[in-house]
Image (cartoon, rainbow over the protein chains, first blue to last red):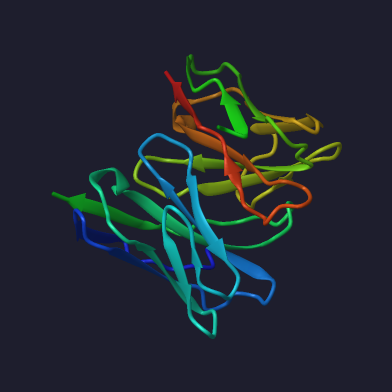
Length: 111
Length: 117
């Protein structure tokens, strides 16, 4: 079973911030939160990850609650090209830890 | 650029034939790779963990004799769908992460779309 739960779909207006939530209440102390997105018929693309501190990169920001049971991915200025399925997964930072995907959130950015 | 690559991107085969899909890590040695299957409008489903030099570990419900995995080198894992049938038509995706010095980030291949006629 997936360790994360996400809303099935969200809409966002172009140019506005998109805030995508994820619940991971059973996360272990050594597990990171990773976010990926998938555009139709392509492999998932890495966005960002974090352990307990908030993180920011050129694509997005990641806000992790203090108890680490949930997180929010923020796309600060959504564009039409950000329309995709967004997945959050939890995983240890070793190469062998397997990851199961939940159903993800389908984000639709509208003009 | 891509660090994990799959081949072929798409393949069409006749029912009863076998199809091999390759997954290569391009700039690091991957002792572990993962294979997923994805049906239309569904999430990725983990099929198996491919371990270099040893047998793959299959998830519950995945037939190991149907989906043969070979990880003979540190940069190549192959998935062979044996005696393929139309219900095996799907999008197959592999992933790997750097063995050391990384953050556990999974790099995904481009995916391979299999259509069985």
